Image 1 (cartoon, helix red, strand yellow):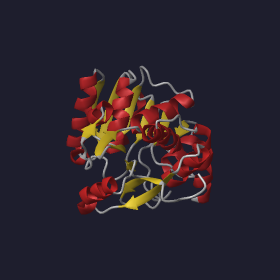
Image 2 (cartoon, helix red, strand yellow; image 1 turned 135 degrees about the vertical axis):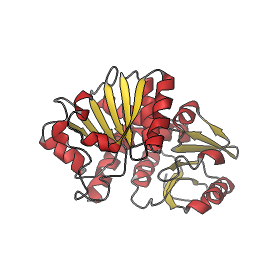
Image 3 (tube, helix red, strand yellow; image 1 turned 180 degrees about the vertical axis):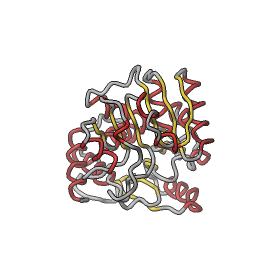
Image 4 (cartoon, one colour; image 1 turned 120 degrees about the vertical axis):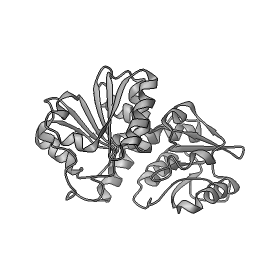
Length: 287
């Protein structure tokens, strides 16, 4: 692609806020590497403008778009069709526009599992603590359940949302129950988990935010994951690394969910190494 012209097709990511998104850098480098005349940008949309924004994208001939906070669930009733995995998760992060129809998918959960597989971290038969019950948490919970984990405990500030997600996980055939977030502070509570996943925004703003859980209470060998991606890590991951635990940030999930979305948008195999390099450079520049 030599540059944007009258034939360029548009894609993007919608959210609020969305200015921090690294997706435009990653996708545009991938399109360029594949010689595709496509352009990807970020669009900050107000909640009351969501439906109009989607209609505008259809009218302007967008090929599709990604969805981030706070719209992964809110976008559902505005779509014409929803893929099975997204329907199970109750959240959408990728929308493909086909002949004027909005088709929703979710690549978050599969992207998370792929990021663990890449590091040799197996999930089958493991006991999982998932903190949070929002759109990303739902996708991760469903994908982990489909991978055949032993159990998933959902801890969330609003217990009813955790219960709703645990019912969904249980319907897939995996042991699951809900817990209030206060429980993760208990000394004995964290001993039973093989993998802990933070799917809340806690840790996104700064390293001075309160520590999400008492890392010292984890059992040896526990893998600590945070869906947030920051160049210098979150406080949770820094404390976990300091104590010798395997710490996994959200950059791998961002990469792999983006690669899956690239394939949905273009029908082509994603240039994973190009996307990985673009992400690495973007993270360094955002410091």
